[in-house]
Amino acid sequence: MTANVTLFGFEIPRALAMATAINAVWINASEIVRYFAFVRDMMQRAFPQVPDIVPMSLPIFLSWGVWDTLVLLVVTGFTWMYLDRFGGGARNALVAGTLVWLAIFVVLWLGLFNMDLATARIALTALPLAWIEMAIAALIVDWCRRLCERMQRDRSPGSRGLSATKS
Image (cartoon, rainbow, N blue to C red; front, side, top):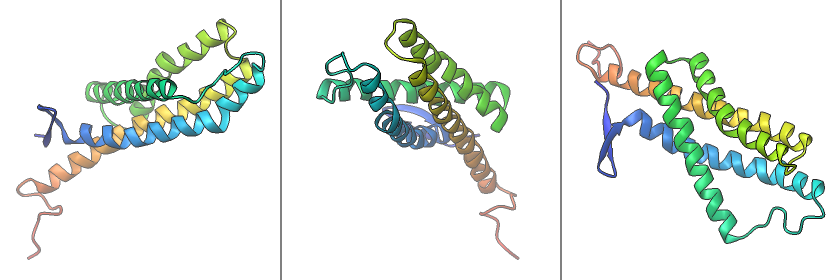
């Protein structure tokens, strides 16, 4: 029996809520670092003829918020279901993270490259960083699942964990 929390009127496993919260911070931080440290400057240098190639404006920030939210929900939700079906552990978490990376980031950058909206250098810089982002996000999901399972076990009657009294 797993502990649940109520979120927006829905009961969800505590580990899923915890993984979603941690991943929200991780994914937003990772996206910001990748964009400002690498992609933005590379895009500006690769396409100097395009005015405002990577503008900083409210509509861009709003669409970025939608993007981050979708990535968060997909990687956390898919990894949760993958681990539920195939079992926990770092190996399965990395497989799930890699599948999400292929479905989102490889398709995105391949499409941009195919339409001449990104150079190979930009794609080959952004893709490994995106894989690291998805791999860590998937490992966070696995870690939260294992942590909550351990906490639940330790609270169960007869366990020798945190709730057990010393005699």
